Length: 407
Ligand code: FEO
Image (cartoon, rainbow, N blue to C red; front, side, top):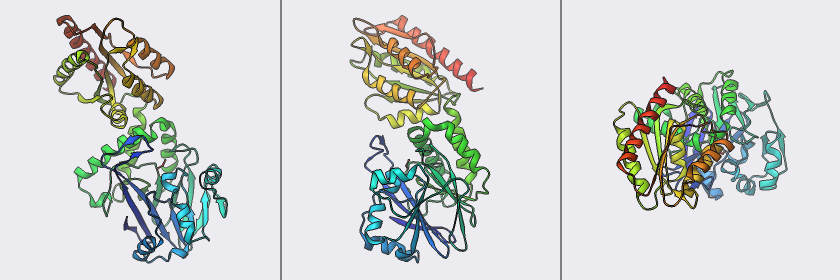
């Protein structure tokens, strides 16, 4: 766990989580950081917590000493959001410090009881409420559904620091000094890519609420954004705000001039077709291409690529009268995340019967994805010369549709 100074009177406690699935589902090959913040006025508050804390009081005491904070002086625990990645530590804190007060939203309080049986010293706060720490005042604003319905942000009026919880967060482990002013442009680009995938996995379904939260936060004189995951934006907080606005806009499309190929194959017949499709795509130099194979690759990266792509190539065989199952599973999840209004070209092989398109049409209708389909290229067994020509024509039509949508 690292301790660092954000600005006068504000410190960050951060821990990197690796070798796990975030939310038990999303692969994070480059890890993810959990950030917590100590805010010192005459009184002291801790904002959010960090899962993975070992619960050893001596360790916590050591960290507090580095910040010149007496742990027993923590009077307030501010829970911006009840999800256990930010609150799982509260029982450990209670083991050696019983007198803190919890501040959280009306929706968070019953969840705090349900998850941790914590019912004491809770003050419910909402829009416009403040907490005077003596020498500095914290202000609260509710941002429901970014990410859970109970979510709020906390704003320090003295320094202009927005403690934004899941909003403006990213994947990617961070080392000591995870601040945009200490990072090179190549590092910032890495974290922005991690932020896009984090957004697509965690926040995407709630994009309408992200827009509302950004509009609400725009009324605050923000100088620093201190999220619950990832980089602290001290030099250019507007950069991550603009990123998040753009990510939210990708939900209904158009997104970027990108095509994501998602493919699966049983015996190599669909693979023959998809290889030709990728070769055709590579000739379209103005279009970025992402390629993912199912079930070999995790959903997190597939969703991340699809989120910023205006075009999709879906290549899968028919399997027992339906779509190749791992493809159906990932498309269902894309539909639930509301990856909408994409241009889609499908290709794939079948043995004795087709059926993949029927299931694709069902997903498109049921989840209101509003995907616009190019004429598919479906073939019995291995693709023939004519099938290869159909694939080439499908890719050309898809790229044209993407260009027209994005211009
Ligand atoms: Fe980082 Fe929704 O918790």
